[in-house]
Image (cartoon, rainbow over all chains, first blue to last red; front, side, top):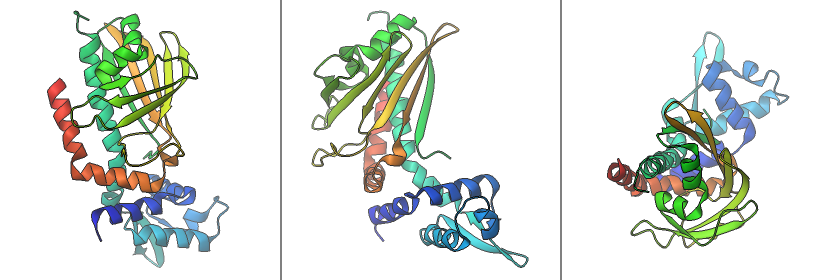
Length: 109
Length: 148
């Protein structure tokens, strides 16, 4: 898969409120079972499973066995890639803030 | 793990009035931000311009000024970086950029927040990611090295 295609698939998987909240849950409390992940969400276990599989297909989460239970956990490396876009915007603001600093601190202006 | 917003805070060794002018005077804003703007900032106004970085002059900028509270708060909406001149962004959601000024020891504390990225179309975020991996990030590093 080409790099841009891979990124498009990744962002498509991220483009859903339920999936984003699953990622947030796993990032704070994970690894968690499907039962725990569906508690209090008003979303069925089947729907949660489907969302987890979508996230799993692009490598954002993976499942493992814990005793008799199947738990899901974050694939942090992949998530970092998704953050790359915001990191890029943030880097541009860093550079702009440095230029602003030099600009307002220059006594000749 | 927000994918929706970024926040920067910097202390500038300059009086608040000086920082305020650098942010809200379109000509001064353009000087440090490196864009050439065609009008003044006023609440509700749309200001257009072009990127003033050599080799990037074909990139257009459009800023919709939201709110101005003298020497305290300035906000506008725009289409976030990077921009592909061959594409029409007019129908797409914009991000909100907010500048907040506060008194600080020895100068002025400035907080810059850009939010609303979760509403930016996925294809656009993916495209930006691709542009980044193909060298946009390098450009930024060059810029940062040049100004520091």
